[in-house]
Image 1: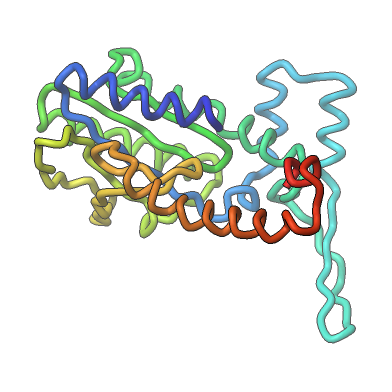
Image 2: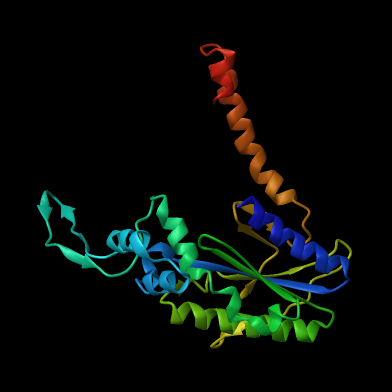
Length: 239
């Protein structure tokens, strides 16, 4: 996650230092792990996975059943055709394999170096930069449509109401409203977004992130101070 966050911030800062306009779209996946279909197995074969390991993963995904217990009554068993088990060690890895080919879906911008995708589990963002603001808007819309089509083709669902666009700026510049839309659905422009566990604002000031972390640190410090009366120094270091 640290490498993904570093890549995201570095891509933005590099473009700003080159005096380019920078915009980012932050996608919100709906029930990402539940939507993964077993075309994942075909992708694993394509990446060269075979033999015992492939058969082990196949048995892990296929022929799984579930039922519901409610008021001490059980439903009948139903076969699961989609999804990977959540809360498992393999879950995030299998999801990453499933979305691994997403960056190659926009080669025309990646080849020219003015777009980059950051993936980590079900967090997806695309950062686009250009010296021309109109071209930036055009490329953001192109990338947005291509990524939505990729999600649809791979049986994944996006929550467009929680998918946001943000224009990154230096402190002395003002934001320009751009029209980023898909099928008449306009994406909300925001000044900050939570991504990879950090709050990113459009000037990379980190003020909002710091403000969100301070109460958590204060709570942790309070707990440690109270525990100091009952635990040894070595035990406190493990808290």
